[in-house]
Image (cartoon, rainbow, N blue to C red):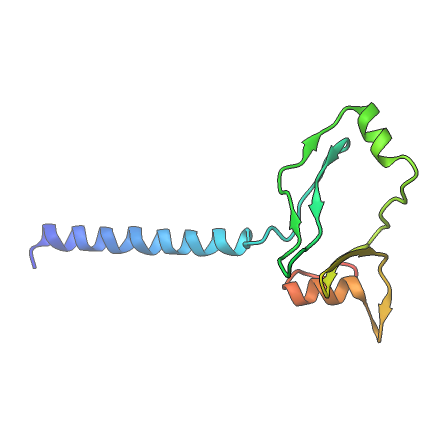
Length: 121
């Protein structure tokens, strides 16, 4: 192999290795499924319950609402607690307060099953 060709091969291997490492880091830093989503004040997401044995759907793009509309939608509702859990069970969608199940809190068990760090433990 000529020195010029050797340098090109080495450069291609180095770039491919760097791209592979960068791709792995990006995948690790931002896992698919969006484990956490921040929603700003006066924003809303629509959640559709499952039907006909399909998955529940949460629209991923929050909509910015006027203060008046947000107040009307929230009127009479119970605010979500510090660590509520959203679960689909037997085709029904539930939002419920965290509670102890056995020796652990439900939120810690769900986050552990999803691979997320349990900062509260």
